[in-house]
Length: 615
Image 1 (cartoon, helix red, strand yellow):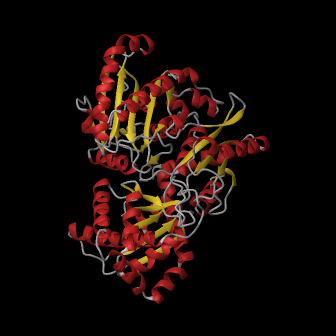
Image 2 (image 1 turned 90 degrees about the horizontal axis):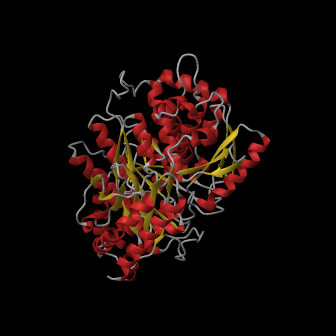
Image 3 (image 1 turned 135 degrees about the horizontal axis):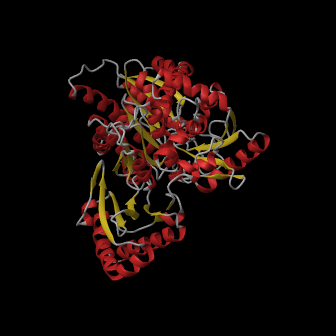
């Protein structure tokens, strides 16, 4: 059948990972298209995704020995991509025909639907229609249960396998079309009639959950911190870029805290520039902040979310240069770490004995290309750092495991992508990123206790950098100094021909070892590199002292460099993307030398391209 061939062709072009399923859904096949139509093959793919997920929900309950709900409740929402509505219009009747109850909220930010899933009565799981930061012609799906995040890696792999097996059936298209036609029209009408009420439910669930995250769920802390935020009356701007956050809580939540708020591109679907909140895409937000600051000096922060609203990078008013500028993603995450770890000290959850030794097990969970500036920040607070492979599901799963092992893990995330995940949330969220910085600026020292910034200065041995009238530029100046390749920089992206990444890394090992042995004296003289170590990252597992680079497979490979005292000072890293058809590389260097970072990145590029050319 032609349709089955088209399904196979479409599936082959999709990327299926724990972070989400993504492909070009625009009917014309153009990744930059703003058409709302999807091809017939993608209709079947959408229906199949709904079908296998409802089967997964039922089997998950059986495996746990739980009673399977006669009518599983599935939450459904979309970001603002043009094809989202067409995909939902396929998934809803398929879910209904399979005996599910569907609560459809329309346009909903990813953190909102995940917070909603935590509290929605008898909810079994959610489907979120989105391709996150991919271009507008893409779309896809994120799946989750009721723990506030996407499926864990093991569950995600199981669902992907079921999806592929179903689409391999000769009758897959006929099965989906029959389910699509079998939905009760009255039930279908009821789903759409209730969209407004359902959206209110999701909005309120998210709004109420935010206080637990921002203030740590402690009422006394909440009251004091809220009063501090309100008294400072800071200003925030946002370039929504037509994202799902246009229909979420941002404006109302900030306003209730007494924060001034201004925004642009605030109509859902008003996507006017690149979706990825990096580089040039942040310039409209920079200009907006400069305009707002000119009107009122209280405006010091801005943010731009991606399309599903679970990620956002920051722009700041920098008093040192007297203008607004964008922060690098790694800087954003590092600032959030300083804020949230200082928060733990301020609340007393993180405390020390008379010798300065931390009295509890505490950690930060991050991905493998997160800058080592986070290691330095954690070291200042006396806590540990654990790394997982790239992928939000990997980092969230690692944090959960650490908590099971008795660790206090308040903050986690992927520094390479910006933003942070603040417990009890299990997803990145620009609101929590913005408010982490706002807390740093607002919760100040008084006669009774140190404020957050003074806590950081003391823990990091920089008491001389604290002053009572500090500003955001002072906080940034106190951060560990590193030069790190931005993840979406053109120089960080390679196009390689080798599909077998294990084979590529095996050949790369030969080239790297040749280079290392031949350039030891040069590398020592130029950069102070006295030794090195190869590290593999697969899922939640970090394997140090790697002997065979091929064992990394498709995971992340890092080469860590040490100075004469055995201290880690730099690294180079590589990994093929699981959500885009690219191979990413980066370098991270202590001391802030941009030229050294560029030199190491170019060295990494040359070695990988040589490896690719010889296979």
